[in-house]
Amino acid sequence: KDVRILALTPLVINQQKREATLKVIRNIAEPNKLFQQVEEQIRPSVSSPVGRSSNLWNNLRVKWHIWRLRSSNFSTRTAAAEVLGQLKDPIAIPVLIKVLNDKYSDVRAAAAQALVKIGPSAIPSLINALGHGDWSVRQTAAQVLLKINPAILVALRVLINALEDNNSNVREAAAKALGDIDPVTKDVVPALINALRDDFVCYNATRALVKIGQAAIPD
Image (cartoon, rainbow, N blue to C red; front, side, top):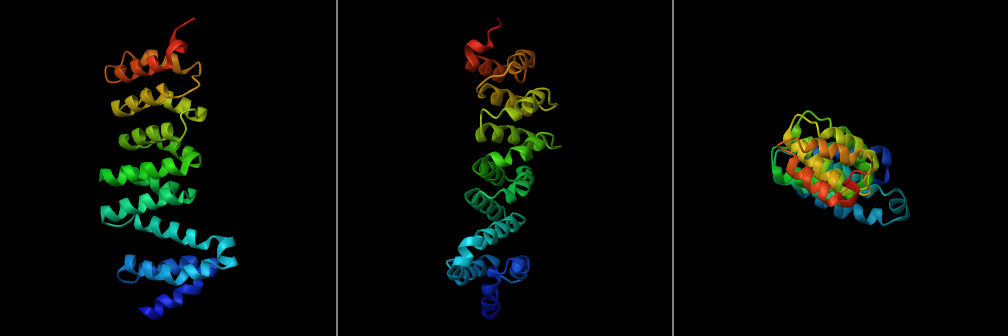
């Protein structure tokens, strides 16, 4: 096992062999413990000019934690999502969105927070997620869009459309998000007024209109 760990050390310098490195790691027992040992071996190499310029260590970490999201252990998946949020690499966006429908709430929350930390680069994928077949994914996507940037105009039309979603949780999340967006566009207020007819959404729609304030009053 130690021989295999030592054999992995130079591979991080070779960009073309990183995938092979990960495959080897995946097939060795006790992967978490092994990864710590590999880290101790690799870090000196990353401190070299080659390692610094190519940022290979961070790339390896991102792919490692993306793989950990497939673990059968929910604690491992939660921890992996949290680390991916810290690393803020856009390459993790698709898999984090996929995890938004994990059966464990801790995993879903960690994935959502990771997307918030990754920021604006996640917006296109989050907008697509508003059309997901699972209502909880659509709801979380609306909430994450709000947290990333309340003023993101590109999401407005999608959020307005979400007011007519067939699931009340999604409609509620959309109404809340629209109330926190500034500046308010001309389409937001009429959509929220129309949503007042919805028994499930009227509370959030009312709050949103109150928060919008003077701009919600017709001319």
